[in-house]
Length: 79
Image (cartoon, rainbow, N blue to C red; front, side, top):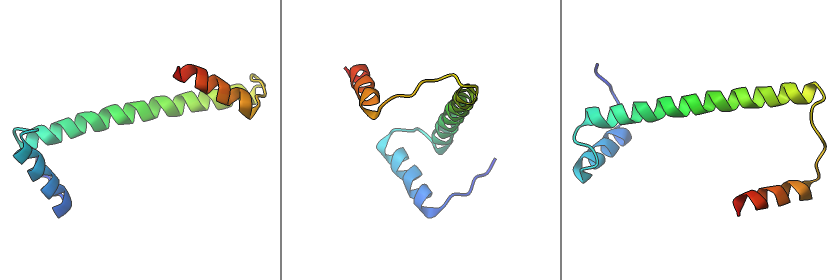
């Protein structure tokens, strides 16, 4: 497979190779594609979760929360 990239991306690839981060452009592209596939899978999972949440709310499952209670719950999870 042959891939053409912009000069900006070409410079990035060269920089990564010069830094020793990657042994070859092929290794960098393989890593980038693995990361892309993982990101796509996470995005699909998030979309499904959002759709399930919307269906749940549409069915009347849910409760009204105040902004203060949501902030408090987020704060507790961060601790």
